[in-house]
Length: 254
Length: 331
Image (cartoon, rainbow over all chains, first blue to last red; front, top):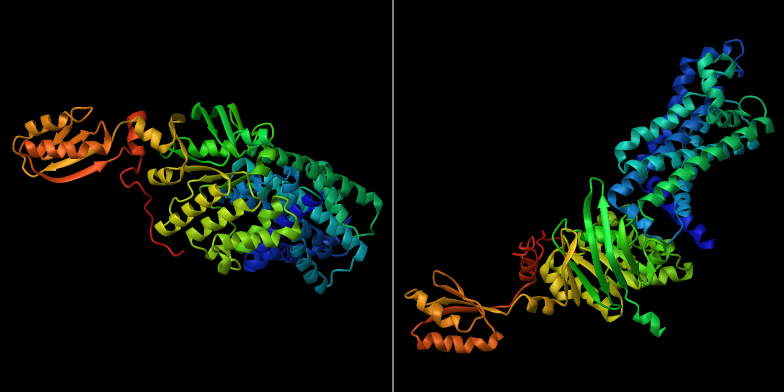
């Protein structure tokens, strides 16, 4: 067990190396959610005046979406990096380690959980500077936990694709998956204002529950009723994509 | 323990790997590598060397046959195999953003080496491969030779019983190649079993205790380099006559010494020596007695390329050079 944790830690440190040693490479991923938040809140500021809109201002409503998108981008980047490792042969070295495959996956995915906090932090600093209301430490901690979970699920999803296609050319597929998953939720308007077909999709989309879990505190109070579906949805996403990713790793060799 | 020593380091029976489209990259090979020996796996590009290695190191599942490495079945006990092998694949895959020391420590952690031993073992290996001064530098700044040596150090971090080196000197300059050869010999002296794939005849000849020659996915010959060469024939004596007059008569004179009728071309004669170098003096005397002067002579031993030619009907790619060509590089 101790060896497993050390392996996970070592792989997470390697995953963080890119940010620490090539910080310029991380800038687009860090800035994108903030730019997204600024652009959308400027374009749709008046939407908050619609009857049935649950937030006082659109910027506060959209901040959690930016946090989720940051987590999604980070997860996709993890898959792209893995595809590069496959192309360059580093992945073979990983597969030659006697460590269990789920442990290796946890190391790869674990770095995504930490890295997703960077775009979220930058986004929040800008958002609070622009007057977004403070959700409270508990709500922020819960939001951090949930976006880390979503980054893990997105990283597992991207890992599945990286192992399937074994090329960085699969990057658009990795990115579009999480983008679409966030798009077909209550990201831009409350559930009651969605078109019927979109509401039907959002209702069955597990990411909707994750988003509503992150949104607590920013809009309304933190409640267990909104928290457990978010945790359950994440557990399901990580379990499904994690299992597929481990299966993919095992199919690479033994 | 006695029993353990007697188990072969690598046992392969009928190993196969078929890819989509019914392409058999490896077609039922058998081989056995004794503990502590350097086994050379020689063959041209595309012969199946790397596919075989990838199956033996658990990176590729065989589609037929069985293989045991360090006493464990590669298909049923892959984790046990991985604990006991070191692998340096054809392309030294190293993270360019990490330093040599960091990579060694990461490799040690991946192999479950206790943290208190990691630093000391890593430093020892880095010194052994001559990278102490570069250990703190990012690998992206290393030359090809340095990367190979670091790759070798990483493969040795957990003191493997069996070391797989897949074309370790391809693309290296002569100095780096000789350094790596010395390290392979040192490992053999220390008792490590080395499975070395190469397409270079000289490398196989210099390093391997025994050889397996693979072509088109099948083992076509196996044995010690000396035995394989002896199998394909005796040494040849190449002669250049001082005068091309009456070449036919000269040919008849030397034919008495060879096991085959010698080939000739212009002033050149070539004769197989049934009794090896001991035949040289009698041949020269016979030619002298018959009035032929000899301008040049060269004794040619059979080469591994002759073995390859005899077994497959083709020359091994690059045999003419007999050693790898590489652009000079800093080491």
